[in-house]
Image 1 (cartoon, rainbow, N blue to C red):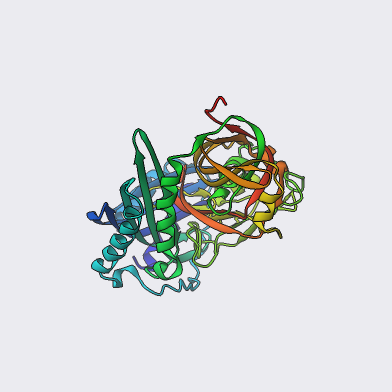
Image 2 (cartoon, rainbow, N blue to C red):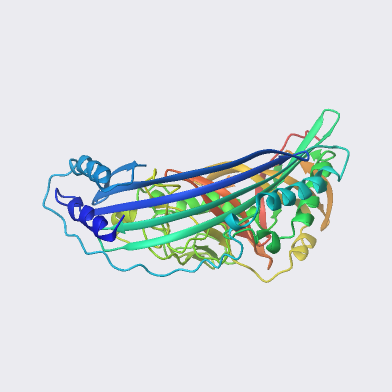
Length: 459
């Protein structure tokens, strides 16, 4: 659609009293290849395209979408939305110019033959399956997505962006008698097929396989309150869920967060500094521009334990009287945007992580975390430990299973007393009101000096 046509639509958007109008155009192509036990079981290709139309009056919002991207259809949607308002016409700013971006994609996935992709997955699948006769299922999957967007609004923003996402799933299921364990890794990046040059997938596949076998002999852990050393990478999911979500404006603006109104106050121990960065080179959660057309940025959330800021979108920012932080995201044109995380992490400390383990007399080493639940309004959470080991006299001993980390986000931040220097990111899909989006969670290895650990053992 021509810029002049988009401008003419926006010129009509505020005629009945809305004070902000926005169009979000999207075209997304997604590919997938699934391999199980040495066989390619599925190859898929899909395409999604459409436009979302949004009007605001203060913080009141109406939203509609269509996959029929032409001026007449969009105008029909707009007329329906305009009927929600009856006030003085708003002011429309002429559309500006697009700002350039560079994604530095070295191997676009549409330039790589399918047989080359399947060969990589079959190779990794064989590494997992051949590690042990106890492995009954090996899974290796590849997902690729290219999302092209254009955002135009009545404040003059006219901005496009292209997002390239590639993710590889590695999973192993081991079985011994009636015991069965599954382990998983899912590294993803904002890049093309060069992800296979950036990550040592052979070593990662072998680690996944060995972990599943090792967990077969893990012992049930006894519940209690104890120190827990949480490893780097996906260990940051606790901060993401229990602290990151309550720092989003969608919670703050409604007062449904334990962190509401606490900027400048102490909310964590002195060793905790945390960011949400929307433009980490190659990161799974990266965007050049957010889904309202604002440049993404590195947002300081907590500095040496002091709360410094929130993640803010336009609508909730109006309630808070605060500017956007480039943190507005949505799954697709079918969703209205809101404040969301990109790459959220606790910053590096100065210690070697093995020294933290050595200085822990008794406790749990949570090497890998899995899913869990959290209530953003209170920060209450519980997370499963997928791979854990007891710490005894500063040494890792028995592998344990069935451990759950239970606590409150605002409380656990004060219990972090050691932070290592080995920051890494883990990748996941985060679901909320604006859909499911790719995000990084991250941290160096940290120690929580006391946290409730749930378990099944009575010994």
